[in-house]
Image (tube, rainbow over all chains, first blue to last red; front, side):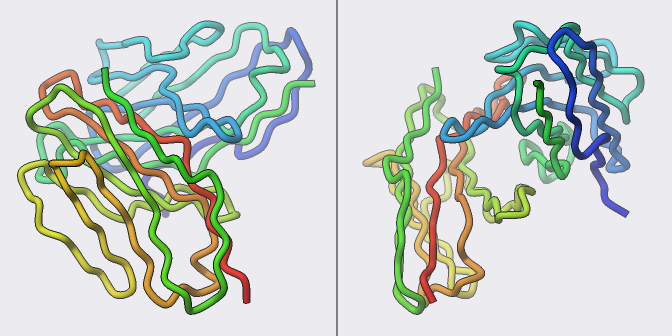
Length: 115
Length: 116
């Protein structure tokens, strides 16, 4: 089984709808991240969480919110989706305590289309 | 602020040729980490290498090699004897090492196409 899973893998929604993307991990890592990838722009950080009680904004947090329900779960919400939020979304995890400190492990991605 | 520049947007080479992907970075941190990721057409991100700023030794892994030069703030990636399966988008990334500064900053990627 994959260590970092994302659901759904693909989603088509309409402008104005609320949508939630979910991320779960079995790696036991304390840190989790949400990134967005647009063609030609690389990955941009939306939000990150260093533990269950810690939530931080990234470079492009406007229009998004997150919830860290447990150490293993980090969800990303679009309260009112708009077409320019059409992108590939990645969740990632990292371990602040291990020898692989600083290395991030990515989920398979969620392709979101907002019509 | 951290910045990663991958000036080559797209590269095409014929199979079996060698190809080098360039990565230039900017950071004020004295200790930092550099990464390369591969994104094949299927979309997932595949980790290739992590390099600590204190370790300037070049690394070779099969057909892949990395040249880290602190003096020019570059971390270039070379594929020797390229194969069609190497076709992908490659991302260079940078993170600090201080607590709270470990976020990854990505370059915009280089799309590599290997022509059979």
